[in-house]
Amino acid sequence: MQDQLSDETLSQQISVREKSISELRKLLLDREQATAALRLSLDDHEDTIQALRLQIREQEIALKAIREANQRRQQELDDLQARLAEREDDDAYRVILALTLANVAYDALMVLDDTYHIIAINDAAETLFGITRPIGQHIVEVTHKPELEFMLDDALQNEEDSLEEQMSFGKRIYRVKVRVLRTDDYFFIGVAMQEVTDLVRLNRARRDMVANISHELRTPIANIRLTIDSLFHEQDRPKRKQSTTALKAIARETDSLLWLVQELLDLSMIESGQAILRMVETSLSQLVDDTIERMEEQAEAKSITIASSVTPDVIVLADADQVRRVLVNLIHNGLKWSPAGGQISISAEQTGDEFTVTVQDQGPGVPDELTERIFERFYQADASRSGGEGTGLGLAICKHIIEAHGGRIWAEGNSTAGGGCFRFTLPTS
Image (cartoon, rainbow, N blue to C red; front, side, top):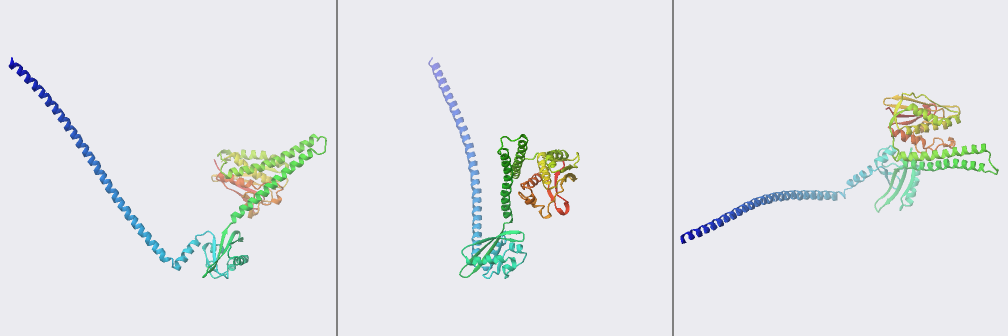
């Protein structure tokens, strides 16, 4: 019995020991797995560290290259500054530098001595006066402008100030500036000439605009005022016929005002790019016929016939409303200048991929020298003969519209046209 208890106890102890050994083995296995994972993690970190070391090395190499490049650039800059410092006292170098600055200028520049003889001149001045190296020549001999000498005399009397005047050289206009420069060792007179032809033309156009608009507004407004006064003159009641005539006169003058305002608005929108063209296939003959019908009443008032020879097969790519505006302006221009009983003819001819439209009247025509200027804003070839009609905007509007279509518009001069003749082109469909 005692032996049997002893065997059971021993078995229990063995079982416990085996269980303990099994747990210990499991713990050792977990420890080994953790150790292996740690080793893998360490290997990964070592790879990362190695990659970082390589990146740091590459950056150190790049930084070294940048430092070396900066050192070379600094050395080059130091050498350049040293060479410039050496040349500061080089008279030839300073002369070449000054000539370079002068010759790249758009303005004509000259330097004179106290006797008004040229001692330096730039290329722009030589081109202006059509002369090469006029060193030593008197400025009047070069410019052929005696009044320039008077300006130099004034400059000598007022050495502290710069003098400016406007002078014409040929067909160009220049702003001339003179300045006297005096030091202990040197005496120079500087002359600069800036072309202002376009600026003067714009200023003249602005003045013409104000004068034309004032005149065009004053005439219909005065007529309206007189017509209204006549309606309410010292009469008990105006007669119906008189009232109808007066109202028609008011309507006519009001139309003149509307025409002026519309032309100003049209030109403003076209030049600002706000006028959008709707290019579609359009029958030119139908467009011309519509325009003639619109102008028929004005033509009948002057007993002028408007005839079209444009055939129905002429199809153009155009904005109908805008091209109609061009035709109205050109026909209106012909009505204004043509004599009573005359005729305005409209025709079209195909040339390549475009049609050339011609509007011909029997008026005095356009002088050859004005065929370009009449398309300027507010320009009128002969305002004294305009009869109070026209703003000088119509042809400018036509030019903008046709050019927006990719076409051209021009006037034939008196030497070839035999009357007023305007032509413009439109693309075929």
